[in-house]
Structures are given as C-alpha cells and as structure tokens.
Length: 123
Ligand SMILES: CC(C)(COP(=O)(O)OP(=O)(O)OC[C@H]1O[C@@H](n2cnc3c(N)ncnc32)[C@H](O)[C@@H]1OP(=O)(O)O)[C@@H](O)C(=O)NCCC(=O)NCCS
Image (cartoon, rainbow, N blue to C red; front, side, top):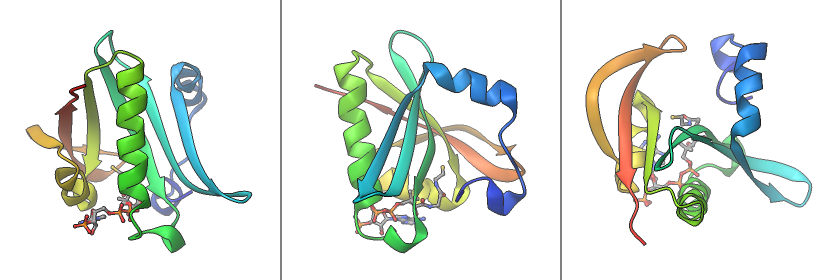
C-alpha cells in the first residue's frame, strides 16, 4: 500500500482490531480502488481522519480534495463537528488548502515527521 509499505511497515493485529469502529471510505473506478480514507471516532464531537491515500497514477486530479470534502459531509451527517489528523510533513500543504489548521509541536510517527492538524466543521 502507498502509506506503510514504502516505510517497510505493516499493520499490527492491535491496530487492525481498532479499525472495526471506524468508517472506511474508498473511491473506485470500475473495479479498481483509487483512494481510501478512514474516520475514527475519538469522542461525540471529534473524528480522526486516517490513512488518506490516492493511488499514485490518480494523484493531482482533484480526487484527494473530493475524498476529504466527502468525508467532511460524512462526519457532519454523524453529528461530528471537528476532524483532527496526523499530517505527514509532505502532505501539510494539501490539508492547508482544504482549510485544515496546524496546532501543537511537530512529532515523529511511523518514523517520519508529522504535525497535528484540525478543522472545525460548520453546517
Ligand atoms: C496527499 C494526497 C492524498 C493528495 O491527493 P491528490 O488527489 O493528489 O490531491 P488533489 O489533486 O485533490 O489536490 C488538491 C490540492 O492540493 C494540492 N496538493 C496535493 N498534494 C499536495 C502535496 N503533497 N503538497 C502540496 N500540495 C498538494 C494540489 O496541488 C491541489 O491544489 P489546487 O487546488 O490549488 O490545484 C496524495 O498525494 C497521496 O495519496 N499521497 C501519498 C500518501 C499521503 O501522503 N497521504 C497523506 C498522509 S497524512
């Protein structure tokens, strides 16, 4: 997969067990999965956006934007009003363009630099 395989990482069974409570979104062209995103409920108001990825050959066509905007509507439909995420440094600009703001200090996750980002959703 785009996110962990290049880093030499796999999902642990504990991580996979947590995913049962998450909302999984995928985008398809015919039978090909071209993008993915997961929403993990944190509390009654907040979901964490995770595992955002667009297949390399489909990047830079607006699919990532459409996917994130769609997930915001899904979050609102679930009565959540805040999305938080751990942004890889290389993707920060993408999220800034979609209205997400940085907060907190930089940190390392899966061996690479990340920042906390968030967006408050309005109906
Ligand atoms: C980051 C990612 C999801 C973006 O998806 P995408 O479909 O390529 O993005 P879009 O085409 O919808 O881009 C929307 C806007 O963000 C910009 N953008 C997208 N990725 C960017 C990046 N890495 N750096 C800077 N700007 C970026 C685009 O230029 C576009 O700008 P515009 O509206 O001014 O034209 C995709 O590149 C990806 O899967 N990357 C690898 C995995 C990854 O890093 N995921 C994020 C983990 S936190």
